[in-house]
Image 1 (spheres, rainbow, N blue to C red):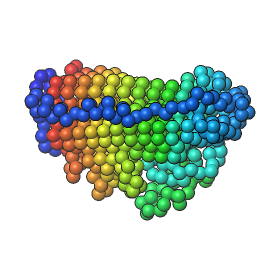
Image 2 (tube, rainbow, N blue to C red):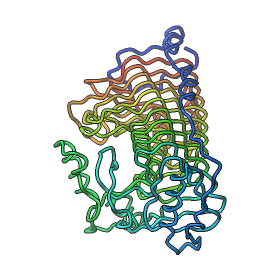
Image 3 (cartoon, one colour):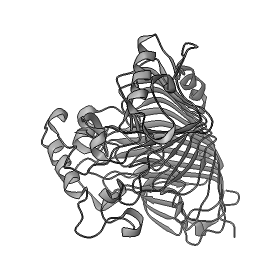
Amino acid sequence: MKHLIWLLFTTITSIAVYSNSTSAVVAELKHSDWDSVPSILAQIKSPEFPDRDFLVTDFGAIGDGNFDCHAAFQAAITECANSGGGRVVAPAGRWFVKGPIHLLSKVNLHLEKDATITFSTTPEDYLPMVLTRFEGTEVMNYSPLIYAFEQENIAITGEGVLDGQAGPNRWWNWKGHWGGADETGWHRGDPDQIKDVEKLVLLADAGVPPGERIFGKGHFLRSSFIQPYRSKNVLIEGVKFMNSPMWVINPVLSSNLTIRNVTVDSHGPNNDGCDPESCRNVLIENCLFNTGDDCIAIKSGRNVDGRRINVPSENIIIRGCTMKDGHGGVVLGSEMSGGIRNIFVEDCQMSSPQLERAIRLKSNSLRGGFLENLFVRNIEVGEVSEAVLSINLQYWDESGEFFPAVRNIFLENVTSQKCQYPLYLVGLPEQPIDHVYLKNCRFYNASEPSVIENVKHMFFLDVSQPR
């Protein structure tokens, strides 16, 4: 095969089939399913709203950054919904809300240019508790900063900023030891989330109903920034998110989602940029992610609880996005026990000394589930500190009897300028990674050869590691 440099693959172990014949690769690449993208896009309908505005100032809001506008926002949202829908408008100003914003059907929360909504960092302001997910497990906990439960046709739009105001000693310290006290404000002996995470997992494993998994006050599980839960026809467009307690954009069990022209700039612990969980028909386009964790991470529930609900994330299109800092650019897992399939990534740029991986799949045999049908093309990677493509099925050193199936991974026209490994593929002996395809890929200035363990059926066409 043309341009294949064998040093690229000097650490291959346990590989069943490795083919570099042009005919074999071309035949296998016919299974690539980009032709299905138009039909997926046709199912993603952005919500429509009546041409009617409800200014938060008409409901008593004052944009001086100090006055509590929470009641005004909720009154405007309720009036808008009861009137048949429209826009709830935050004009230019700094609007402080002492508690969560709960969206209702047919409401578009619109932030005009130079409008900033800032959120309280007092946890008790996010009571009463709501049904939410923490790291893929259902729980009764503090409300996300913006929340919608079983709503339809909702949006957040505009040119404004949503600032969660999280930081050292404000939500982030609940993570515990992460990067040192200077980054989160946590010090040895301070309370943290560790015992609560362990307790929640034990409750879920024991089959305790979600409504009886009571956390909230006196506990230390951080909330996501925005979470549409069991909702459909959702649009998030144009706005900027900053300083989230935890995951930023986190739709759960929702469908027909459009996330467009959004900026996420949040560097705290577990500050993933966009995490669709058990969602169907999702478009993420022309967004910028600069995060403290994965930029985009697709998920579907954790372990027993994920298998109980058993709803995959599927039919997700990611295009035209820019990824800067983060643990991974586009990530599948690790909370993926309900499965992930039919993911399309194209025309993205990823680069930063603090971006660890470009494309990342992570799971283990405690998770189970499947990761299948990932199609990636036309990706420019400037610099990543580890691998361009990373698949690790021994993630977090956890193991069990639910071996995840990972198969049908396609990369085409992917170029990187600097990395440690072009590929880091570590499967499981009991369930190897199956069918990996690379076509027209260039991995410049890789400092080490690829690592490939427990993989079968690999195909390469015009792949090289130039110096």
